[in-house]
Image (cartoon, rainbow, N blue to C red; front, side, top):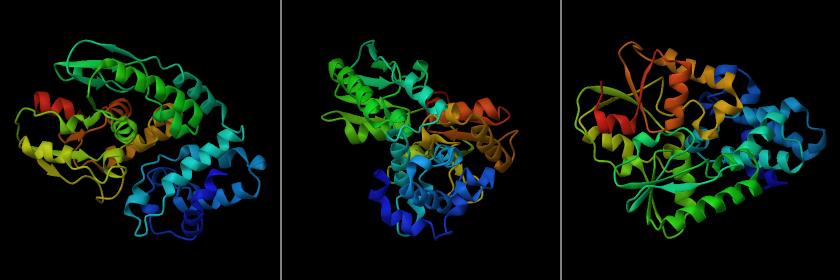
Amino acid sequence: MNIENFQDTINACRFCFMCRHLSAVGNVTFRESDTPRGRALLTGKMQQNIKNLPPDYIDTFYRAELSAANRFHCVSHYDEAGLILAARRDIVEAGLAPENVKTLAAELQKANFKVEGSGSMLYYVDLYSDKANAPKDCKIISGGDTGKALEVLGFVKEAETVWTKFQTAVKASGCQTVVTSCPASYDMMKKRLDSVKVLHIAEFIEGKRGSGSVYYLDSDYLKNYNDNMTAPRDLLKKLGYELKPFGTNGEESYSAGEGAVIYDKLNPELTAKLCERIAELADNPAIDILVTASPYTRSVLNKYVPQLKVLLLDEVAAKGVK
């Protein structure tokens, strides 16, 4: 079983309460099973007999938002996010994936990438991005998720097939630099694209100077998966904005499920709850400006809590804060 590669995490997390306050889903469901300790206990049950694993146990692993905040801030850095991904792989390989998960996976496998336009660089438009935000003088590649979402759902073989199609399209473009606004796609491309430079949009754009205060909502993938990348914060400061701290602490995830890539499609009700909690933590929703480097986070916050003023980092750089 894949989870056996994380036996140290299972042994440690099932006896530890230290990071439960960083469990975004646990903070809105108030269920012990939605914390690292609860999920580690359930993986112990998986090891005993996965074929008899109750459906609600399986559902618990797909409720996880995969922010990796627990791992990033764990003093021993036990890989709880890796354990969840391994558990999902084991569930899929055992033929136990829930119907909604299988339906999503089948849809994601239809990805068909195409490259348009002209330019020396390539801009990837993910499922939540807008072509209108593409930098000038860039070719555009679009047509679906890179395979990251399938991988996160536990469909590793299927993810590899989609990734191969994406990689082939990138190479055929002739571009040596790929730019994306999507932190999840950045994470995958940075680790797996050979001989091509990969940039998040925050590392690429210059932007228009502005003024005033904004709240920056950290991206899970840029912070917890990529060593707390400072480029988005650096850019906002360079453009003249004062960054105000958001929420109750600097460790918690406020990305509304970005770590799970397509969390809104998998768990719309929980996504709404995560967004509502962010709205509740806002100091003054009527005037506060929230900035995110994640098209996913911007998309779901605008959908579920439209009373908040949420801007994508790309938009702030290009147009300024209004």
